[in-house]
Image 1 (cartoon, one colour):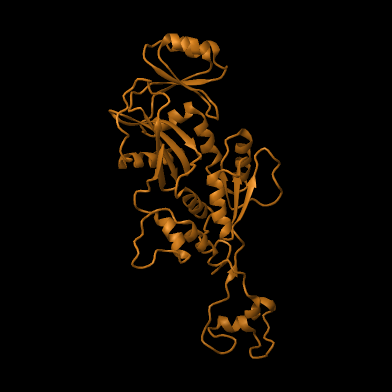
Image 2 (tube, one colour; image 1 turned 180 degrees about the vertical axis):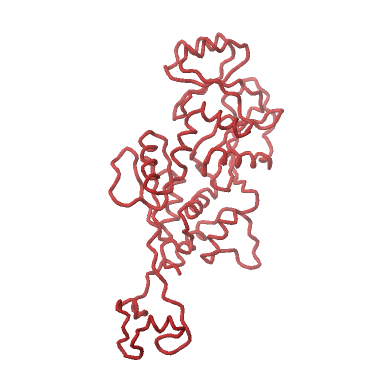
Length: 373
């Protein structure tokens, strides 16, 4: 499987604005390649203003009453500054910067060592942010919620925790509602078709017996567990006899059925983190053993990148994966995943760290962990 970043050659303006505010924009005369920010650039931007305020250099910081011990201004230095001159009679000075507490980031996951999460957390923590991990299976620690959370778990406990955090006003990426919607493949198909996406037609059944009774066609079909999870069912069945055999031994749970879409034999795994799109290709597990898959497909077409972004907008997702197959009629979406693994994708940790800053409600690289004006 090959993996390449496909950000389209243009970095999102909001990412550039956040880094530019920290003095991390590209140097004059050096071309901005549009790639996700490098580790050193992002970490340096986060650290730019991380130094604590020097109270010794600001009398107002140690003299809360605002008095002037030297007696040069009965109203005090703050009053002098408000009249446009300094306590020493010099030209007007800017007020001392206020100190903003460090950005607090929470990660809802049972696996904090996941490569993407660990790398993004290291970038944020290296710049002064406070990063905490919440195991959805453990009791929640007391205290105020963090500024933003990454929801990298789809268990019922994780979704319940995410909903509680959202009810307290915290930003959760992705939201609990969007994450849960992507776990229900029947709801996913309905949402996709309603949004006008080229999604594989999907039928839903409450049990294996109901599936066997209804699916009597001669063509191959793809049967999937209705509820997406690890080790769920995804299998290609060649006809009515195969459907009956499957139903006789399948676990008792709801299923969805999609007509098999003839395709190139390659699964296109498209991943998005905010505006950044990453791609991977792998031989389809559902392709016929004798299928002539032809040469490895070319680079991601621009229209496919647009399809990825339309899918994210339709489902309200910020970090997500879209499974696409190439057909003679064009790309067809067969699955959508909230917050996939994205292992080994160059630039993905930087893109995730930048997304956290943008999603934290007014935080930028320049204000994370340091004074602000």
